[in-house]
Length: 286
Image (cartoon, rainbow, N blue to C red; front, side, top):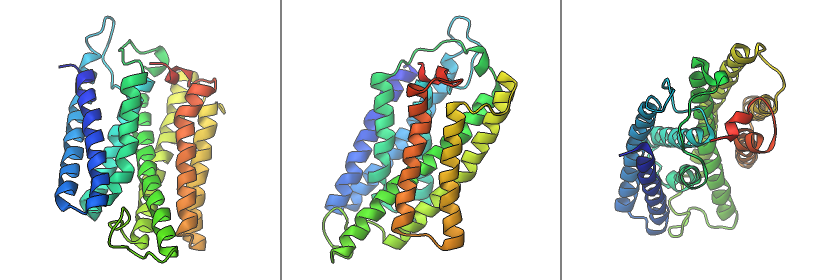
């Protein structure tokens, strides 16, 4: 079995898990929640094996020297979905808030669907600029940060839905999709903690990216569009944390800023690669 076939199974697994998490909100069935979680864990395990298999496959291509499968858009999108599941499952282990899965699994499922249906999955030897261990350090730290921001975004959407219901006199209704949401306080805390995970990882990603840029192009910073947008994303989340620490920002404003930050993150990751020319243009290939 090839890595591509395993990734197809992962996509189906994440879809089933997503549907079951949504069904859990509607049915309040703990059995459904357990099945959704089991599928999420199985999908994550299979995806881990598939990523390892694709790494092995890089050694099999003509002229291939073998490399961590993080070098093109297809591989990065697949890895992004893997990191989303990693952060979600870690949070689930601690907080046991199954309803969060209905708002996080869609990010992983959509990423895998796009990768499998729209992106070129072929394996080719690395271009010279990518032949560095800094590639691995940079991509791993950045995408772990992006994944934490995705979880924060999903939780923030839940928070806004929750407080809107409460403002209409539906405080923790027994039925409906909102019935099993965590309290607004827990959702706000999850948003904050997810960003506290993502921000230092993004900072490390920028630092390792600068080191990689110096190795590949002889300069740490060149105001390439990707570099500029990564700095914009960094400032948005820095502003979030600064406002939280110094002004006590929480609740609705924090949720909105978290969603804005993730929107900027997605543009930094995909919009810059696909729409703007720069030193990172190779990221649009594959």
